[in-house]
Length: 262
Image 1 (cartoon, helix red, strand yellow):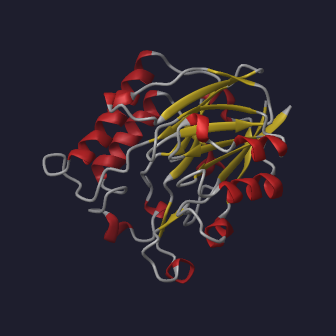
Image 2: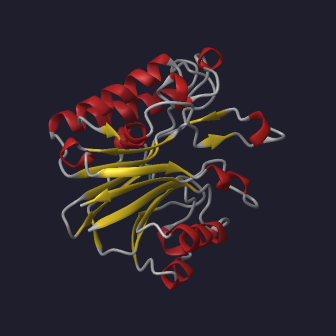
């Protein structure tokens, strides 16, 4: 039975409850993974989501920062969470569907503004987070798994508006791209979005700083859907909902979708 999954950094689920509900009503993904919920789990506004059919949720939260949630029309069970890099942040939660597929929802640290761990502790935390994630995948190769989230790295030259101009900008520096590649390789993860859309510029984030984000179009693809090789061929119909960036009081990220025939 196929299911459609979406991932979205919502930048406060309570502030943007209406946008989440709109996406649920208009697009109706079976599973919606949110990052940067900025809410304790007990304060996530689940009633409106339940009324729209999203009766299942697993989540990890904290007041005002981070936070990840998996909202689903399909039954799922909590499959735990990991505090990679021991930051004490709510940046990962996993859920298991009845068909045995495990979904990992991750929010990789943004890394601050200076791409140097000696000058910027946050950049070091980002690299350490990815290193620990890589090491875990080396130790136990994941199977029948999907990893989604705001990974805060645009790895390819056509994942940013200007490869040359962003080489020294956090999210596209060579050291970050290498760390992400090592993490991906350790689990043999397939980048589902680029499997389905192999060529061309592709973005999922546009800065709030741009006076006209659409006209400037200085985007980056920071949000990802990966799958393990045993199920990656079952994925199709990937898409990024650019128009959502133009909704009222939007997140600076937009949802990324993929469908799996499993």
